[in-house]
Length: 159
Image (cartoon, rainbow, N blue to C red; front, side):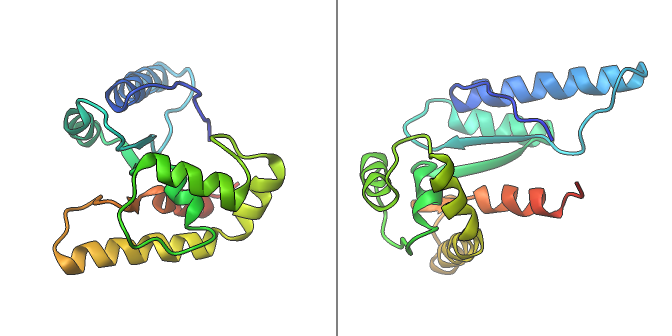
């Protein structure tokens, strides 16, 4: 597994992943390395322009998405609490600072604490998916996060 530290808007991330995947496949055909089985982009819904275009491009190039609405901080919150009500990015970030003691980048201690609670967070995120499906909300409605799908794939991958 390789994590690319490229940052940007969702469309830029998906374009970067598409280009990386194409280059990896080309190199594999030439006997210079191997392409990965899966490519993932992680991003927030936030207020990004071209979000729909990014999602369509990902589907067209078989790139998996771990999307959080409103933001990645929701995933962190789900490690500590349920979150059924819609919330905005600033509120999610405020709650993370209060509950978990970090803003944006978790400390090593915070990461260890979060890791211990991944199963709870996954169940809560899956319950949100079920809630949205049951009440007719669109997929990825606020609040929701697909990060659990990425975590599940990482756990299923042999070392």
